Length: 416
Image (cartoon, rainbow, N blue to C red; front, side, top):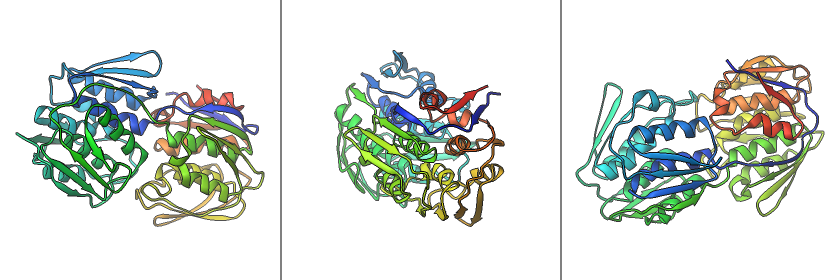
């Protein structure tokens, strides 16, 4: 099994380019099922999760071809099947996003219950509730969900929680439904806006994406289009923390600062210098990181996907900080691994109390999930001994060439 070794590193310096957003790419690839035309996606990150959803589409009869390093051409006129293999679906939760498009395009879909990172309960009931409201007949049994609909009809749907995945599934299905669909308490993430922009380029009629009320007027059909994926705001935030934790000076290219306002605000609160440009951000560290309190919330609040990285940063801050996790109940699995490296962290329910220390030491640790894995890399950059990170397949699900990008900035990191 491959491992990542991180050794104590100098202050990171230089420039790093952020890849396209994984969390934007996955629903957009699924949405390409809605048209018989060809879609070309640009700035697609070459990640394990992206490869998996491409395999899911291929298994349905769709033609998926890479063009160069970071563009995909997807042609769905050959869509034949309405059931994806279990062995692919279980690998990644986002595979569940094919449910809405298949239902809208073919009138039926059969998908297995989803897998993914074990960071807590992420029930699919909101997905199913939304699709049922559009007229789908859904049955669950033997680990599979069967959905059928002679015709989808627009409806008013209230999300009990602003679930990103459920909002995406309902938007995609509603694009080909008859009449108007209104989604209330919808997720507001930039990835929702990117999906809506992609669908609009295909001929969908969507308004309100990025707010808590989204309106979709169904159309008869959608055409192919070309679309560029937005930058990955979580990857950007991760490299910003890497600059801060090493007292570095890093310029991050291909980033939209409007998408990461809470991250910028918390870094500044920690006395890190953040300079915003048009499509770049420069982060200049401070020898003394100030402890700050954080509470994760749905967008536009502080992202749960940055919680583990900030915990690594607070582990070496001056003072005591408290991080409250409100989105996923099981997202503190990295705490025990950080403790192995000398971090002083106590857990009280959904709160973590972190006493900053300058005495982190390397240790054999494991990536318990995607963001936890990268938090261990960040801690390893400032630990006195080498850190050996196992189960790095989690990290490969969300970060393109992370060792190369960090090495270019001066980090001592390599894969064995």
